[in-house]
Length: 220
Image (tube, rainbow, N blue to C red):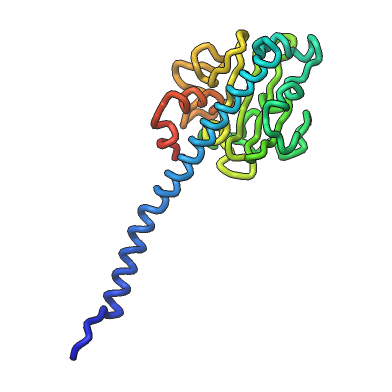
């Protein structure tokens, strides 16, 4: 009676073929799951910001507008007023005692991002994400609210990938940065570019992330 079996050579060939297929498909599969996680985090963060502004209006009877929070005019700290609308695990304070300011890079990863717009307070939320505040001064008319959607301990730490910036305009409307009417709107998309070496590259990506259904799929 003969027993059919695979030879060692056949087993090795089969394993080799499986390894080749895995090597070809695994990176794209990992990128897909990473990008889906970033997309989910982006949408969750945008929703949290929208809800916070709505709760602020419901509680105070007015929209949150830059004019009310100009530092030199009245001393109100935006981060102090906003803390009750988020599940804050840790308050990094005004001087950011949580992490180094040079961990974030621009959209294409070529240079360090300008941290200036993240430095008026940071909250680490209970889901690990980080909320940044940029408060208007006497001569400015903007409020920027930014999110690191997966936390500073997780890569890529690149603006336009896992870090997104939103602007509250003079009417109290929350806008994704890069939208028409925001401070970093560009018809040529220079603030969300794979080729730009500008140290603000990525700050205008939130609008693209919100309106382009292929945005996260195309991150690579």
